[in-house]
Image: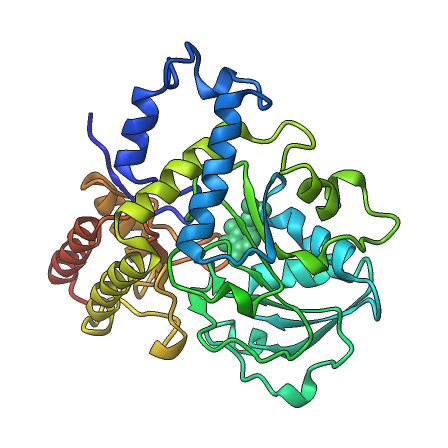
Length: 362
Ligand SMILES: *Cc1c(COP(=O)(O)O)cnc(C)c1O
């Protein structure tokens, strides 16, 4: 068996100890005589799994009791609709910061149910930076203020959270949740599709302040009403049981590794190695030039020609460094180095990049 270093942006690598534990428990979960995949979501063992997942997530993120933790389906993309459907209760207006592909999708979905006011955008800079936020442009009467904390495709991160006062701050944290520390109390709602930094695709984590639940628009389908899921402990209907189980193992792994603080330190170390290699080379160029905006999760870079990109990707793959192709909308290369990517993986990539440059002088 040869496992590769998989730099995929999502679904992404999972920690090896988690996969091993899942393999051990595959046929007979803790003496139940069945796999978690075959188990009723109303059974005692599954109840322990979902409660354990929530408890450990609360612990590692420091989630206050004044928030619900929900395990939903539909991906982050469904939250683009679910957030406005549930939070548009007064002005039916929300402020958005447009920092990339995913922000744009959130904006266009919100427009179906109310007003999406873009307070700042870096689209004219090809999203290679985070725009300056001018609080004077914020809507005092907005029902929420939406940001994408980490822009997976463009490789940027919002480091300074906007002060939105009484307006609830909503964050799409799909690609950096649990990768860096956040004070949950600063947010009204955090959502994240699991397949980057949490677990397998199929489950979406929503952390929502309790007082934001219960005022969904009348047209809201039952399944898209946070209240229904909150009142039923994410068990209104059959949840993505196996994905929740693996997520629980990932949360336990993070705790055992020293928590999000220790993971963040390691992530910063990995990112610094990679950005140093790019900045000290003549062959590779990072589209995000300003270190202040650079993501520590997704590192896009490009070689001088598409032909060289292709050659680079093909040779990397032969060494077990896979899925380094940039998103189809931007091209080039991208190394996604989420929590489960070991330091050795990044070291091996950096070493390969150096050798490739020596052999491909431009
Ligand atoms: C991947 C991603 C999404 C889309 O997630 P799905 O679970 O596929 O819907 C949305 N936002 C961000 C920031 C992402 O990285």
